[in-house]
Image 1 (cartoon, rainbow, N blue to C red):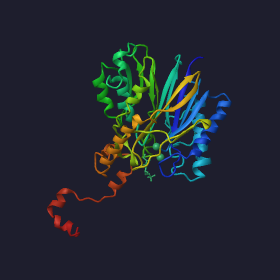
Image 2: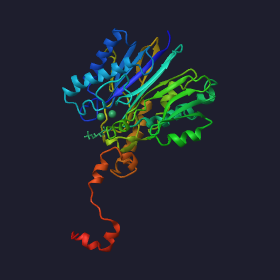
Image 3: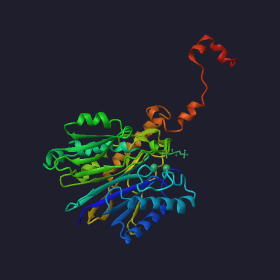
Image 4: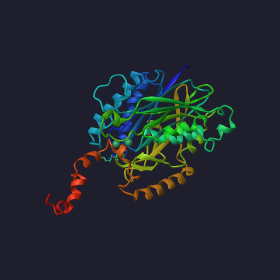
Amino acid sequence: MGKVTISIIKADIGGIPGHSWVHPKTLEFASERLADAQKKGLIIDYYVFSCGDDMSLLMTHTKGENSPDIHGLAWDIFKEATENISKKLKLYGAGQDLLKDTFSGNVRGMGPQVAEMEIEERPSEPIIVIAADKTEPGAFNLPLFRMFADPFTTSGLVIDPEMHEGFKFEILDVYEGRVYLLDVPERMYDVFALIGTPGRYIVRRVYRKKDLLQASVISVERLNLIAGKYVGKDDPVGIIRAQHGLPAVGEILEAFAYPHLVAGWMRGSHTGPLMPCKMEKVIPEKKIAIGPKATRFDGPPRVVALGFVLHDGVLEGPVDLFDDPAFDYSRLIAEFVTDYIRRMGPMMPHRLPPEEMEYTTLPKVLASLKFIPQEEYEKDRWKYLRGEA
Ligand code: F6R
Ligand code: MG
Ligand code: MG
């Protein structure tokens, strides 16, 4: 067969209770609608899964990236699920990520997150689909660097001639709309000069340098920049290809063993560890995988990883890759860090710095506070203290 496109389109269209979990009925609804689309020949295959309060529609098709048909299908499903399930059941934040009313051919800039990759299927095409909740797309910067550029994570960079030349990182500045193309390992320090600021610079795509084979893609939509106000963090999704001259499945997963600190969590305003989580339940006959729920302090931030093998666009899987005792220790560290950092309460650096609070509700609180110019106050502070001024 020719090229196949893998698309993940994700949105939070209502949680139960609060921002913690996707209702299984929402997942079932989406799965039924995608089954119809498959019968009509619009898509080759699909899977519906969740992480926290976000529902992801994973689809394979031959229509390429940014297809109005595929984006329209996802948009309609989110809209209908909002009307038929979220609103009827009064789920919390019904339709919260659907920021625009009318669909105009592409869901980018309308609220949902999108990660898409058109590929030529290799003789065997193992892929890992990742999704995180209560954090932002830049949360994947460090793990992506680790898997594609750090020989302490990916020994293939040293051992496998296919990977030895390294990778090309495509980094997006989401504020200025600039793209940086940097080769690793040569430009490693420049890469960190950018991606160490994950709220602004995002490793969007990675290519194998020797033949420009695309190895990964991450969603980059910034809801707050679209809406101009706080509408939740932009919980990211991504697709990573594995094996045979790319990082092995285990090298990709190894990059998540250390639960690094990311921005998000409660009210999108706190720093916390990114915990690798297993799914609550995979229901193959319904093609749904019910993800973990966000609990403590609406979190902590979490990531799930589902493995598939593609055959002519058909999704064989999923395999719930963090469902293994090998990741229990990472979860334990994440719990420890959670407990440690939570004791800081509303103080920085647990609470995010002011620039990152710009789109939250904190500016409203600050604007309501009365103040006295310092010079006036120092002239006669007792007058102010006694409440006489
Ligand atoms: C974070 C998130 C939640 C909410 C929090 C308050 O991305 O969605 O932590 O910010 O539950 O939600 P509201 O203001 O809707 O009560
Ligand atoms: Mg939510
Ligand atoms: Mg979410």
